[in-house]
Figure 1 (cartoon, rainbow, N blue to C red):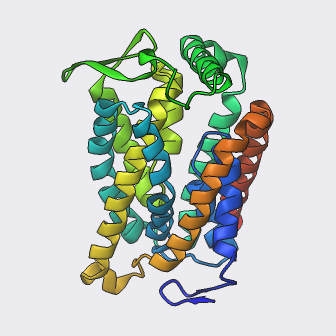
Figure 2: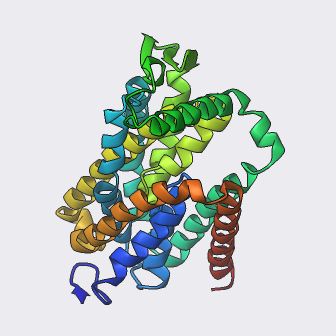
Length: 322
C-alpha cells in the first residue's frame, strides 16, 4: 500500500500492527508509545522528512480519546492541572514546530535530537526502579495502594469500577490562585505551583513540537516524582494535555504547509498513515491497561528502559559517525 503524502510504501496491516504492539508494551509501563513510533517510521519505513513529526501527532489524536473518556467518567480529571499544562504546552508546540522545519530538516541532525530525548526517557524509566526514586514517592505510593485496594474490593463485591469506591476517589478542586492550586483526593490535599507547571509544560511543548509527541511521557513522571502528586490524579491531566496539544500541532503544520514555508519543506502531515497508526494504538492502549496487572512492573520498566537507551545510543552514534 502506498501512502502518497509521505511516500511510504508498506503492507496496509503493518502500521496498525506495529502501533498495537508498541502501545501495548508502553502502556503497561505507564508511558505513551508515540516516542517509539517515530523512530520506527524513520528507521524502518524511511519516513525522514519534517512531515513525520505531525504525522506522529495524529497517532495521539486517534489513540488517546478512550483514555480521557475513562478518566472523565471516573471523575479523576484534575481540571486546573490540565488547563495549566495545556496553556503552557501550546506555545511550546508552535515554537517547536517552527524549529523542526527551519533548523532540523536534516534527518541526521534530527536523529541526534531524538537520541537525546530517548536517552532522557530511558534513563527516567530506569531511575524510577531505584530505591532513591521510590523513597521520594512514599505518600503518592500509599494513595495509589489504597485506591487499588478499594478498586479490588469493589470488583469482589460485584460493583462497577467506580461505583463503591466512595466519594474520596473523586478529585475535588479546593482553591485556585496564581500562586498555588490545591485539590483533594482520597482524603489528602495536594498542591502545586501553576508557574512551575507552566514552565515545565512550555519546555515539554517545545520538545514535543520538534519530536512529534504530546509530552505526556515527560510531564507525568516529572510531576509525580518531583512534585509528589499521585499518578491517579496526574495521568488524566497529562493525557488531556497531550491530546489537545497534538491537535494544535497537527493543525499548525497543516496551515504552515499552505504557506511559503510549506513550499520550501515537506511538512504536510500524512493523515491516512497517522490514523492507521492511531487505530492500532487505540486497541493497544486498551490491551496494555488490561494486561498490566499480570506483568511485573519492574521487569516491564527495566526492559523498556534498556530498549529505549539502546535506541538512543544508536541514533547518537549514527550522528557522530555519519
